[in-house]
Length: 489
Image 1 (spheres, rainbow, N blue to C red):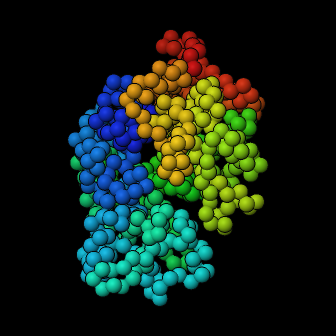
Image 2: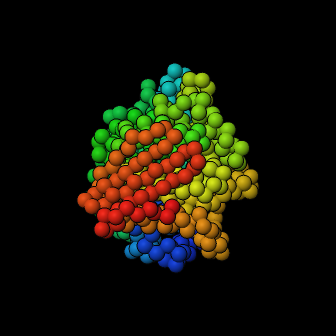
Image 3: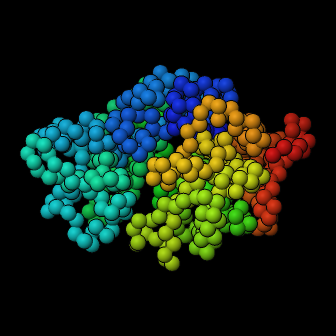
């Protein structure tokens, strides 16, 4: 499958109108042909939590969202991208429930990772525990086997509760390979074109290491699952939040990667009013990436930008964003914080709000994203230039909900009338349709208060100039006769 060089949309199955059926209606009624690059539907599967990222199974669509038929209907107009949670399953899945009932006698016993599977004597020694890249205070949860009363400590990377509701799987086990093959086959049968390998960096558990993106084990798994996907006509997109050098390694091996660095770098340029670090980054980044400004989590800093950000500037950016209503996700482990104690993992807030709801600054940010080499993704809240949903964050106690507003049909139709949204839609169409974006990319010499980017192919040429002092962006392109035309950004 060839990934199309056009804009993609990211959305939850219920965030635009309440279901997959209404999502399809809204796409056809209000955004026809706009997302030829694809629709990334965040997990629509039955799930016990984490807004879909604690899947009970990948074989079914949750009834409250719709059916596989709804997914196929959307897929007839745009390529479909779905998540495969390769690292974990829900504690409520039939697989783990069978393990809780029967313990080692369960046919799924080898699917999971008791601590004794890695450390035969039990828990890891203190020095080994300190090396593990943690997403919880400790990577284990205790469960009682109902048949025997035995307490088993199993690996659980994610989950806010104790015990966790997300149970890690042993991707090297025969049963895990069987299930992953079954899941991927189901995706293929329903027309899925691209699969995001969610949390894939955490699948490598090896004593004496960080248990995160352990080499060469991670590449062996990626080779297996990408081979499986490719045989089914599916492209894979590994999702890894790590030091940017890790992304470079993936790119060198030919994988599509996520540009988790661009969102903060664009914020830094617009809020600190200098394109210096943005231009430095654009010169070293691989081109085979999916680009983004916003998503269902937040704007990454640590560890994604380790070595690329200046603490002084980052603190200024964070302070401005907090004043504009954002909240923060901190780095849990002290050893993974910055050398001066800087500990921001992600800035959480609507990207439009982080730019103080300044229409010109927001369109400048999107123009930079669309001119940056790669396949652009636009999050549904960003598509509608949404503001922070403080009430959702307060009601749920989850700071990420600030940028996960669920739009009713009326809200979609109302926000479509706003000039900033109409301007963004015009920009998306231009990015999709102007052929020079399939040509050669150039970063032009300019003062650091200005960014100038260009694309050229045959007679087509377009150029972006962003003035960071005044939050202004200008696009000039050549028409069919080669005459310069200013694009009404």
